[in-house]
Amino acid sequence: MDMPTSNGWRVKSLDAILATAEKKGLHRSLGAFQLTLLGVGAVIGTGIFVLTAVAAQKAGPGMMLSFCIAGFVCAVAALCYSELASMVPVAGSAYTYTYAVMGEVLAWMVGWALVLEYALGASAVAVGWSNHVVGELADRGVHFPNMIANADGLMANVELMFGAKPTQDLLNAAHTGGFINLLAVIIVMAITALLIKGTTESATFNAVLVVVKLLALTLFMILTLPRMHASYFHPFTPTGFGNLTSGTGYVGAAASIFFAYVGFDAVSTAAEETVNPQRNVPIGLIGSLTICTVIYLLVAAGAIGTMGAQPVTSLGGVFLAPGSPEMAGRCAAIVNSGAVEPLVCSKHALVHVLQTIGYPVIGEIVGWAAIIALPSVVLMMMFGQTRVFFTMARDGLLPAAFAKVHPKFKTPYVVTAVTGLFALIFAGLLPVGSLADYSNSGTLFAFAMVAVAVLVLRVKDPTRKRRFRTPIVWVVAPAAIIGCVVLYAALDVTSKLVLVGWGGAGLVVYYLYGRSRSHVGLGLTEVHELDADMPVNPVPPFTGFE
Image (cartoon, rainbow, N blue to C red):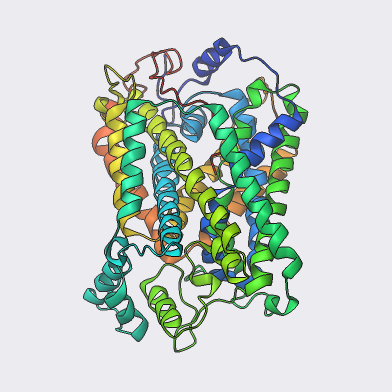
């Protein structure tokens, strides 16, 4: 029976969860090479397609350092993640790990923070997809109405309404910007409907999408790297190390670029199916993250070296925040003056680079690769969110309606609809850079808690069987914790406050609703979700998350 511990922290029985895990009987067949490929497929994609311009505005050419910093933090966090994933290979991800090790309150906070990772992450990808569609239409002479292509005008008017200084850039955004990103809303609605219906997305199709993304990026590198000019790399770090209030600098860019690496847990969660996981999981994790970082660096170098990536400043010489109404207004003014649109202003940066240097057809191919591949990423992020919420509802921490399974489709349709509504609101109103940063704030918190959980469990239960053990854990885990804290600190103030505000709201919900209804708190012994008729949405383990 799962009961509160003596110090009042309710801990879900790890033995019960592990007993369930043992029943899975997963066949061990994956080697280091297969794990590396799995990791490359899971990581490469969305971030590099949609965040290149955001990173360039924050760091200029120094965004190459940002990719290295973000990759390192992901690597050490992944090694911690792998130990718990191999011990507790069940639904709920970091939420379940925290529940089993550090108790209900912190588990609730992690599960609540994962909403930011998955739902807002899905919103960010949806906006990135919308930007590519609008760009492709424009290239064909079809100009999507600006009023429904973005929410720059709405956000500018909101800022002016609340007393923001009416600069020329802000006024320009208020008059020329849009009021909703309609295409982003539509794609989220479509994906929500697919998840409720449970439409099968085959692993083969996902693998094809991975190949499409990699071929597109390979084409980009082949065409841009030979045409680089060293002058475009100076100054290399125009915004410096970073500003902890604005989120600029190469560390601030690393905090945004972190989004480009999310998905590496596909390797971690495969530990149960890996031959000799103690050796092969680290190889797969480090190998895939190294390969992805090299690809990212080469793509970034190609973009910077062919057309430059210096940040745009206001008329007063102040670096502007990417995605802000002021930035939108300044970019509009630059384009209206007849100048070539800067890389940092583009909403489909890689396509824009190829078009600018004389490869419009290849640019179109890269654009269509993003358009084809990104919806599956929205689907997998929303799928992950619904499963976390479903697990929390099964634990009694959320209303039982969230665990309702559709009688025909056998999917958790209520929680899927709620997730979809949440995602589409933010996809319609916020720019991709802001959404990625908000998503990262939740992800960084969850990953830091996983690293803490590894250390706590090493002290509390050192003899428990671990199929994978984090190497030099007393170095790796603290490095993961410190790295997550530094990247969180490097986010802009709004992104930091989003996590704090969201966490505060979560605690209110927990103490008003979840705590008194918690099954663990009530002393209810449950069969774990993998044994308890967990709804089976026939979407298989994916190979193209990020």
